[in-house]
Image (cartoon, rainbow, N blue to C red; front, side, top):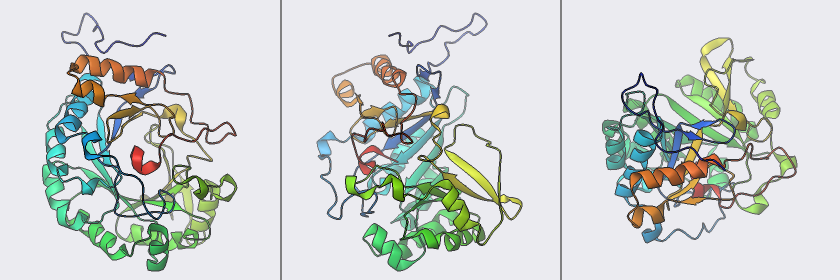
Length: 353
């Protein structure tokens, strides 16, 4: 097996060596790094974890702020990463989040710009930190919100915190974080009928709603392929109130397929159909767990340990080589749409969204 070197020899016309690329065997290049800052969460969403929660990682196994920043720097300045997204668990539980973002905001990509920095959050506590996060260099935010119905929200998350989420959304807008997107996982018989109201709520506020097919990344008993609502089911629900028109993909690497609402190209709704319409062929993501493992795919059954390298004195180049090795063996597809699908080795909260 031939694995691309971290340092790529440049053409003779280029004076400085170009950054290496996180290339896999199928020619895909990873440009988007998802960094999980913690496996802990202050919600207990039924599709993500059991009511009692999970056995959290010991603090000593979690990457320090300095280790997170070093790996982000290696990814951006050595391996060609251009976009950073901080996730969890719930990343707002990380006390050093602003400092991590500030240090990442001064990095320079191979395009000569700072990386795009985003956050995926449940928005609990965002009202208190939105301004400081924006000041640190956060560009945009995705907020997890499955319904506007208080009872259904409490049923799904096992917490009565809907009002706090809505307050966090307002704070993100006031802090100038743009664009704001809402991510909603749809569950048959629970929040499916709530989707039209959620769409109108987002449209009224200039927020793009992205509806996500339920995936098998939670407790084993919570996912049934025969019971999920597919993209076509979701479109049918939303079309009861609006006319939806499919748009051509602007970003071929995005997992989201977008529709304009009532003929207005500025009013959008997106669907992430990981099960019924996989987008693996255009995937450009690489994932770093909060304990320092590299995953080439959300549904990977294997990981590459970078934490041990970090703590044993490895150079940036050695860490970069190991990262390249992990991405080189990325599978062609996750197989969610086949009977051969293998359950991932961790649940979503332990991987990072």
